[in-house]
Amino acid sequence: MLATEAAANGATFVDTFTPSIGHDACKPTNVRWVNPIIATNGGISAHSDPAGEAEMALFVEADL
Image 1 (cartoon, helix red, strand yellow):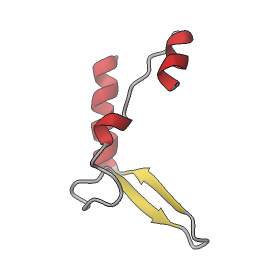
Image 2 (cartoon, helix red, strand yellow):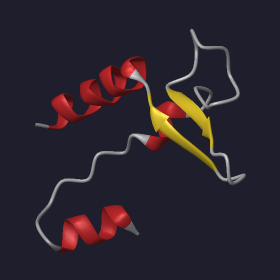
Image 3 (cartoon, rainbow, N blue to C red):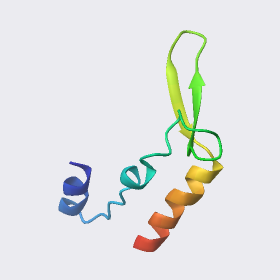
Image 4 (spheres, one colour):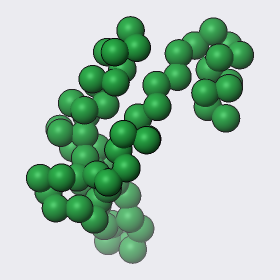
């Protein structure tokens, strides 16, 4: 859906999800691209770590 909407509006969609498969928050720190954050209210969040940001930037740069 995101790729379709981007194309329909003249924007470039960069798929950063597919390359991230296998680099999820449950992987060891030297493999994962995100840091899991467990909130005090029981919520769980994840934010990309420096390795994840660097890897995603490569895909974005390739499309520029």
